[in-house]
Image 1 (spheres, rainbow, N blue to C red):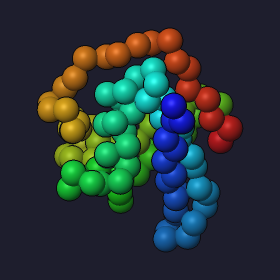
Image 2 (cartoon, rainbow, N blue to C red; image 1 turned 60 degrees about the horizontal axis):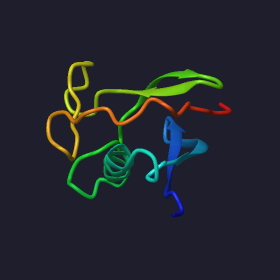
Image 3 (cartoon, rainbow, N blue to C red; image 1 turned 120 degrees about the vertical axis):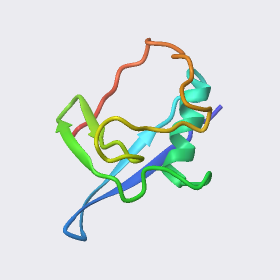
Length: 96
């Protein structure tokens, strides 16, 4: 199985700063990968497009805003309000 990859174009003041790729480990966490993929493409009518990263820690994570309420208390999943965690065996890695 080939894991899907999703790409985000990071812009500041409408200028492209960076293109970031996310490999989705559908072979290990299929529901999480499916959810992230759908939120990335907006195929369900909602998702990450137009939202902001408010914290970037190099080598660790990108933290994005709450794209439903924009105040840190929202969020949405294609699997309903919440879905069970799948596994904690994977580590995030990012170069910037």
